Image (cartoon, rainbow over all chains, first blue to last red; front, side, top):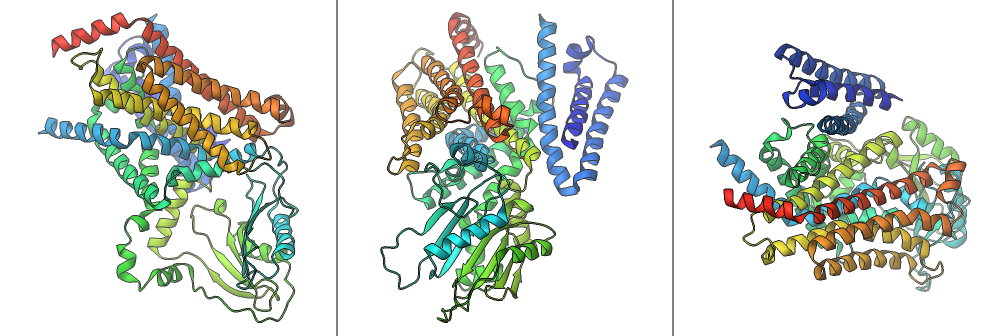
Length: 93
Length: 519
């Protein structure tokens, strides 16, 4: 269960990070975001990743928690790539 | 200066990656499968069913050994973990035993009966192939694998510098754009699991480090025995006294060991001089119960059950090594984490594969005459087909052979493995005689069809097909069949994509032409 929760958090984190990147803003938000909004999105992204790590460590302990976190953020990042690619393809049509 | 560094790193990355990329692909693919080696073995022995029980299995094994090898010098019992179901026993026959007693190993079920399941190496073969390869001396294989792992480490580190855009293009994956798409796939699979790739490559080297660099041990210990005694505790063989003594019951000893280890189960039981008054029982902690690959062990007097000695790995060096090896092999991982290991490994396999393809895609445009590439290019192209589609086909054939070879066949387990390599070699030959693009399409489609056939053949030849295991809630079998179907679909889709590209070679040629003019 903890795995699923962290996966969702990490997915949110990566989507937020993508919102903070100029390259992806057009596909995600439809328009370029200002520097303040970009910075906010990036901060939220990193905070969510840190929160996911803290949660995992609280439940599984520092060693196992960190290992599981690395695996989960990898999968979440792949899912984010999939989602962003899918959205960009729909926009492109 | 900075561009100079990047250029030299690009050169390093390209050639270290290519030179051992084919071997690395095979190591990554089989190593990834090996995270599920127990599950694969269970799938490959469909006759075996039911959950495991370490205590009952140990007692069953002792009954078997008392009957078959009562006067052996030692018994070595590997108990099933939560994911397996069979007990493996080995014994060292008495020094004066007649040479006719050649069988010294057996696979037992929970009740200590010799298994009647089909002969197969199962997932264990994939695990061993991952670092011992096959058809060659193990030592050569391990050196070769070590060089490949070293190259991998170099390729990862130089790759981070070479592919400077991996972090700026973090989420970039564009389909249908030729070279750009391959680069995206290479980057995305590499960067998303970068911590895993670094960890797995480095810890992989650590598993065999004392073999690659024996000088530390040679400089500090008189001989190998002194070293292993320092590490694992003293080891002395005691002669049989000739006085018989009954064996103490294992169950309370296993419970006591487990209590000592904070609830962790026993994985290995070793008896010396069984049945004699000098007999001892050594219990070692199961590999799946903690990070470290080198577990605690405890020795009892076999007749009285009195504690004789305890050992656990201590010292920064051995503990670090033990944890690193444990981290690499992931034996401690429960199913959630195990799937993460598997997915990361799959990402690594795709990273290596896409890197290999990228080498040819990048150079094709720059060929003086794309219709007639030079020898080196043709060689790489064909080796890529063999390494990627050939191995995939071979693996699928390995599973199909497990279901289709006659059960009573002589050396059946070895024949299954031969089938894998025959299929692999077959695809290699096919790649040699066909035009490369056609060979890609055909061999990828073949791999896809073979993987898709596995669940079908399983349903036809056993009573544990996908529908039935779904109803029975047999998740090991369900997962195996579903992964086979997914792999089949992935290879067929890839074959379809390549075929689509082939359908419009004009555009490709024109683009290639334009690029040559520009440069």
